[in-house]
Image (cartoon, rainbow, N blue to C red; front, side):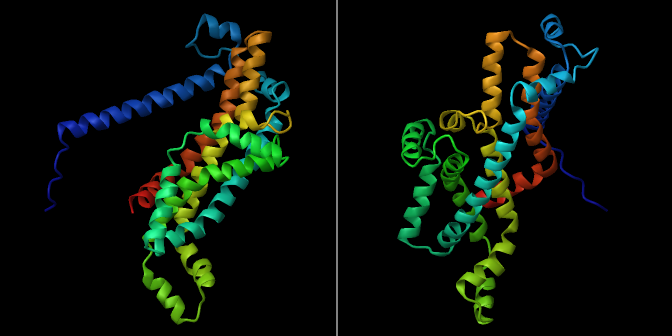
Length: 281
C-alpha cells in the first residue's frame, strides 16, 4: 500500500498560489502587449484593453522600415552570440583553475570575481567610453563585444566554478593515468562533463547581452551599429516628436521580447536548473 503524501502546509499553499498569480499576471501582460501591437493608435487610446477588430500587421512593417529594426536585430544577434561564446571560452579555464586550486591566491581571486558582481554599470560607462575612444573602438561592434565580455566575466566565472567544483577529481586522475596532459584532460574530459554548465552560462550571457541598453546607447550611435534595445528607444523618441503611434511602438516591444520568450519557453527549465546546480555548489 502506497503511503499517503503529506498535504502541503498552509504557508506552502499560499506561496504556491502567489507564484501562480504572478505567472498568470505575466502571461496576461505579454498577451495584452501582443494584442495591442495589432491595433490602431486611436483604437488603443479609446479602448486600452480591447482586442483588435481589424488586426494591423502593418505595425510590424513600420518598425522594420522606419525604425531600422532589421539591421538592429542582426547587430543584436552578432553582438550577443559572439560576446557569449567569448565569455564562456575565457571564463571556463579560469573557473576550472579556481575550482581545483584551493589556496589563498585562488580564494582571493574568487572573492575578486564575486565582488565584481556588485559593481554598478553606471560607474563604468565613462571610463569605458574614454578607453574605447582612445583605442578607436567606440561606435563599433568589436568594442561593444569586448565590453559585454568584461561585464560577463564575474558572473560567468562564479557560475562555472560551481560546476567544475562538482566534477569528481577521479576523472582527471584516470585521464592522467592514461597519459593525458593537463590541456587534453580539460578539453577531452572536463568540458564534455560540464557541458550543461557551459550551455547555461552561454544562455544567461546571451540574454543579458540581448537586453542590455545602457552601454549600447552610450557606446554606439551610428544607425548601422545600434542594437535592438537602442533602436526601440530611438523609435519611441522619434514617435514622441512626430506623433505617437502606439500600435507600432507595441510592435517594436514585441520584436525585442519575442526571442527571449521563445528562448525561455524552449530552455527555461535548463536555465533554472543550471543556475541552481552551479551556484549551489
